[in-house]
Length: 181
Image 1 (cartoon, one colour):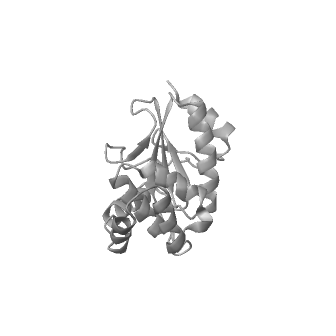
Image 2 (image 1 turned 60 degrees about the horizontal axis):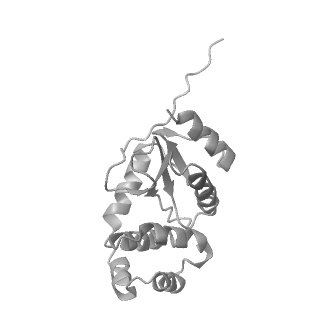
Protein backbone atom coordinates (compact mmCIF):
# COMPACT_ATOMS: atom_id res chain seq x y z
CA UNK A 1 0.00 0.00 0.00
CA UNK A 2 1.38 3.38 -0.92
CA UNK A 3 0.79 6.66 0.88
CA UNK A 4 0.42 9.97 -0.89
CA UNK A 5 3.50 12.12 -0.91
CA UNK A 6 3.15 14.88 1.65
CA UNK A 7 4.21 18.25 0.31
CA UNK A 8 5.64 20.70 2.81
CA UNK A 9 4.67 24.31 2.18
CA UNK A 10 7.65 26.59 1.73
CA UNK A 11 8.12 30.33 2.03
CA UNK A 12 8.20 31.76 -1.50
CA UNK A 13 9.16 35.35 -0.67
CA UNK A 14 12.67 35.49 0.81
CA UNK A 15 13.44 37.69 3.80
CA UNK A 16 15.10 40.96 2.80
CA UNK A 17 16.27 44.15 4.47
CA UNK A 18 12.81 45.61 3.75
CA UNK A 19 11.13 43.20 6.18
CA UNK A 20 10.35 44.02 9.80
CA UNK A 21 12.92 42.00 11.72
CA UNK A 22 13.26 41.58 15.47
CA UNK A 23 16.30 39.83 16.86
CA UNK A 24 19.82 39.37 15.52
CA UNK A 25 19.92 39.68 11.74
CA UNK A 26 22.53 36.91 11.67
CA UNK A 27 20.51 34.53 13.87
CA UNK A 28 20.74 30.92 12.72
CA UNK A 29 16.93 30.46 12.77
CA UNK A 30 14.33 32.73 11.18
CA UNK A 31 10.63 32.67 12.00
CA UNK A 32 8.44 34.44 9.44
CA UNK A 33 4.98 35.20 10.77
CA UNK A 34 2.01 36.13 8.61
CA UNK A 35 -0.42 37.79 10.96
CA UNK A 36 -3.55 39.87 11.35
CA UNK A 37 -3.59 42.34 14.26
CA UNK A 38 -7.28 41.68 14.97
CA UNK A 39 -7.03 37.86 14.87
CA UNK A 40 -7.38 36.46 18.42
CA UNK A 41 -5.21 33.44 17.54
CA UNK A 42 -2.47 35.81 16.37
CA UNK A 43 -2.73 37.48 19.77
CA UNK A 44 -2.03 34.13 21.43
CA UNK A 45 0.90 33.50 19.09
CA UNK A 46 2.24 36.98 19.91
CA UNK A 47 2.42 35.97 23.58
CA UNK A 48 4.04 32.63 22.71
CA UNK A 49 6.59 34.22 20.37
CA UNK A 50 7.45 36.85 22.97
CA UNK A 51 8.31 34.03 25.38
CA UNK A 52 10.21 32.06 22.74
CA UNK A 53 12.22 35.08 21.62
CA UNK A 54 13.14 35.81 25.22
CA UNK A 55 14.37 32.24 25.70
CA UNK A 56 16.24 32.04 22.38
CA UNK A 57 17.31 35.68 22.01
CA UNK A 58 20.60 34.82 20.29
CA UNK A 59 19.19 32.03 18.14
CA UNK A 60 16.05 33.44 16.51
CA UNK A 61 15.05 36.40 14.42
CA UNK A 62 11.37 37.14 13.99
CA UNK A 63 10.02 38.56 10.73
CA UNK A 64 6.49 39.97 10.71
CA UNK A 65 4.41 40.21 7.55
CA UNK A 66 0.85 41.39 7.12
CA UNK A 67 -2.07 39.13 6.22
CA UNK A 68 -5.15 41.13 7.22
CA UNK A 69 -8.34 39.13 6.75
CA UNK A 70 -10.62 42.11 6.27
CA UNK A 71 -13.84 40.21 5.62
CA UNK A 72 -13.62 38.82 9.18
CA UNK A 73 -11.60 41.54 10.94
CA UNK A 74 -12.80 45.00 9.88
CA UNK A 75 -10.00 46.89 11.68
CA UNK A 76 -7.11 44.64 10.62
CA UNK A 77 -6.05 46.65 7.59
CA UNK A 78 -6.23 49.97 9.44
CA UNK A 79 -4.09 48.44 12.19
CA UNK A 80 -1.56 47.23 9.59
CA UNK A 81 -1.48 50.75 8.12
CA UNK A 82 -0.82 52.17 11.60
CA UNK A 83 2.01 49.68 12.15
CA UNK A 84 3.58 50.68 8.83
CA UNK A 85 3.21 54.38 9.64
CA UNK A 86 4.99 53.71 12.94
CA UNK A 87 7.59 51.67 11.07
CA UNK A 88 8.28 54.61 8.79
CA UNK A 89 9.34 56.39 11.98
CA UNK A 90 11.44 53.48 13.29
CA UNK A 91 8.76 52.34 15.73
CA UNK A 92 7.16 49.33 13.99
CA UNK A 93 7.75 46.84 16.80
CA UNK A 94 6.41 49.18 19.47
CA UNK A 95 3.18 49.63 17.48
CA UNK A 96 3.09 45.89 16.67
CA UNK A 97 3.22 45.06 20.39
CA UNK A 98 0.65 47.73 21.29
CA UNK A 99 -1.76 46.42 18.66
CA UNK A 100 -1.54 42.85 19.93
CA UNK A 101 -1.78 43.92 23.56
CA UNK A 102 -4.89 46.00 22.77
CA UNK A 103 -6.68 43.80 20.22
CA UNK A 104 -10.05 44.77 21.62
CA UNK A 105 -9.26 48.46 20.99
CA UNK A 106 -8.49 48.63 17.27
CA UNK A 107 -11.43 50.84 16.29
CA UNK A 108 -10.37 54.26 14.93
CA UNK A 109 -10.82 56.17 18.21
CA UNK A 110 -8.79 53.74 20.32
CA UNK A 111 -6.19 53.27 17.60
CA UNK A 112 -5.63 57.04 17.58
CA UNK A 113 -5.15 56.89 21.35
CA UNK A 114 -2.56 54.15 20.87
CA UNK A 115 -0.69 56.24 18.31
CA UNK A 116 -0.71 59.08 20.82
CA UNK A 117 0.42 56.81 23.70
CA UNK A 118 3.45 55.81 21.65
CA UNK A 119 4.31 59.46 21.10
CA UNK A 120 3.83 59.33 17.35
CA UNK A 121 2.53 62.37 15.42
CA UNK A 122 -1.21 61.62 15.43
CA UNK A 123 -2.18 63.94 12.57
CA UNK A 124 0.56 62.59 10.28
CA UNK A 125 -0.19 58.94 11.08
CA UNK A 126 -3.94 59.48 10.64
CA UNK A 127 -3.31 61.15 7.28
CA UNK A 128 -1.17 58.22 6.13
CA UNK A 129 -3.82 55.74 7.24
CA UNK A 130 -6.55 57.78 5.56
CA UNK A 131 -4.82 57.85 2.20
CA UNK A 132 -3.65 54.22 2.50
CA UNK A 133 -0.04 55.33 2.14
CA UNK A 134 1.23 51.87 3.07
CA UNK A 135 -1.25 49.71 1.16
CA UNK A 136 1.39 48.64 -1.37
CA UNK A 137 3.56 47.21 1.42
CA UNK A 138 0.61 45.40 2.99
CA UNK A 139 -0.51 44.06 -0.38
CA UNK A 140 3.06 42.88 -1.12
CA UNK A 141 3.07 40.89 2.13
CA UNK A 142 -0.41 39.52 1.40
CA UNK A 143 0.49 38.37 -2.12
CA UNK A 144 3.70 36.77 -0.84
CA UNK A 145 1.62 34.91 1.72
CA UNK A 146 -0.76 33.59 -0.93
CA UNK A 147 2.20 32.42 -3.03
CA UNK A 148 3.49 30.57 0.02
CA UNK A 149 0.18 28.80 0.58
CA UNK A 150 -1.01 30.91 3.51
CA UNK A 151 -4.77 30.74 3.91
CA UNK A 152 -5.25 31.63 7.58
CA UNK A 153 -3.65 33.49 10.42
CA UNK A 154 -1.41 33.00 12.14
CA UNK A 155 0.93 31.15 9.81
CA UNK A 156 4.57 30.65 10.74
CA UNK A 157 7.50 29.54 8.64
CA UNK A 158 10.62 28.31 10.43
CA UNK A 159 13.61 28.59 8.14
CA UNK A 160 11.34 28.79 5.09
CA UNK A 161 9.29 25.67 6.00
CA UNK A 162 5.70 26.07 7.16
CA UNK A 163 5.24 25.20 10.82
CA UNK A 164 2.15 23.01 10.99
CA UNK A 165 2.43 22.15 14.67
CA UNK A 166 0.77 23.92 17.53
CA UNK A 167 1.96 27.31 18.71
CA UNK A 168 2.70 26.46 22.34
CA UNK A 169 6.07 27.81 23.45
CA UNK A 170 7.39 24.30 24.14
CA UNK A 171 6.51 23.17 20.60
CA UNK A 172 8.02 26.28 19.04
CA UNK A 173 11.18 25.92 21.12
CA UNK A 174 11.54 22.26 20.04
CA UNK A 175 11.07 23.29 16.39
CA UNK A 176 13.68 26.04 16.75
CA UNK A 177 16.12 23.74 18.50
CA UNK A 178 15.70 21.13 15.74
CA UNK A 179 16.39 23.79 13.11
CA UNK A 180 19.42 25.26 14.89
CA UNK A 181 22.65 24.20 13.18
